[in-house]
Amino acid sequence: MKFLVLLLLIPLAEVAVFIEVGDEIGALWTVLLTIGTAALGIALVKIQGIRTVLAARQQVAQGQLPAGTMIEGVMLLLAGTMLLIPGFISDTLGFLLLIPAVRSHFAAAIMSRMIVNQRNRAHSQDNATHIIEGEFRRDD
Image (cartoon, rainbow, N blue to C red):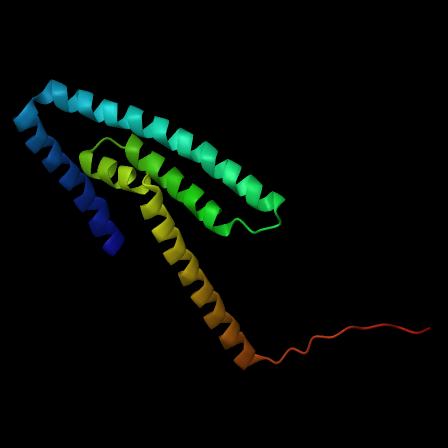
């Protein structure tokens, strides 16, 4: 139900902002501004995406798990999608995700949430069954 409400409210909010901006600066400038923010955003996403891929490769080469970098890459994909959607609200959110500090903060929050969920799931499974780990060797 919440998703349906968001699905209806977000486009209505975008249209309302378009109307307000169009009244202030004119229709042509509003369209040009929308196209310009999309072009600038996609260029920034491309640059930061390449940096993210290189950082992930470096982490893998050092034997580290690039989980945070991968989450940041997904956020860059989300930012690019938001920048392609015409609208000033989605562009603002997309540009916010292009700020490395904001992206790192969200990535850390997502990773800590995933770790907590994994621990809770493991704890509930431990209560359900007892698993004893060991090694087996046959001496025939």
